[in-house]
Image (tube, rainbow, N blue to C red; front, side, top):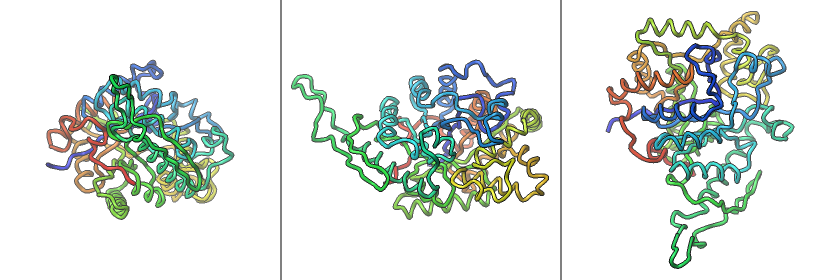
Length: 435
């Protein structure tokens, strides 16, 4: 059987994803941001197109790094989580049968028992379709919202994340698969010999267990992660079944892909146990020229100050006050890939830096359905990735257009499934969890 792409959708509980002007487009809907119907509809759209899954990017607060406050994000409609994704995902699960459903939750802010219990509850209720996008948190504002003075050092956060996942795995396995008896006649509900304490104790945390929730159809949630730093890659090699990567030049993407796969094998896993999905921001038109006109229009709606604010937030340093190297000024904050992007922008003349920052946008694939499919096929077959995370420019129309026009073209080429092969997310992506 020929190799097939994985397709996931990037979502926010709000009108704006990574494109800072998405909410301003006439096709973007705003009146349903806080309504269940919005999320039910997008889940059905993605499922009808046989997407592997979707996940919500999330932040536990309002970005306030840029220019000393959250003015730009609130005023210009930045990427804000207006709802807790863990309240939205059950709504989407109830409206669908096959689509995978992912939540972003922090190992730095939340204890393992809470994480294991909430995620496993949703995994059981959805029939084994949940993914956990594991983050260690990258902003001081989140730490303060959870009563911490500051974030621990980046390396230390990953050391703690290893322990949190280890603890969650023990909690998820505290019920054997056949622990429930449900024998009304003899009055035996469950077998206590098949329920176990976790008794996990590490350097940073401990938890006794057992969890109160039985095994899900896929055992436990699929583990996904997006760290691109050397330590983040090590963590992914050990645990991740899905790695979300930002778009990169082909040569760099291939090198990063191969490095990760080598580390996965070194960790005692199969290369196929960790799928790599690259971010793809697609602007689709009936023809290439129409698509370019659409791109010019939506890109022309960008407010430069919000664009710069997004860079500040993601890099963990206020770019309006940047005087030295972004990485050193960010300290323990910021995402590795975005810090690199800011560092590249810094190579411009200082007087041009803010102008460049305000114009910086995620790489876009612009064209007709055939042109977009050509580019995705090129990246996929070259060995850059195992699939894509489709980032919407406007919501919900971007995902609807991709599902309606590009997915059938990928299916025609034999690059993407025409029906689900399994009832669980892990079954559909074909991975095995780390140990």
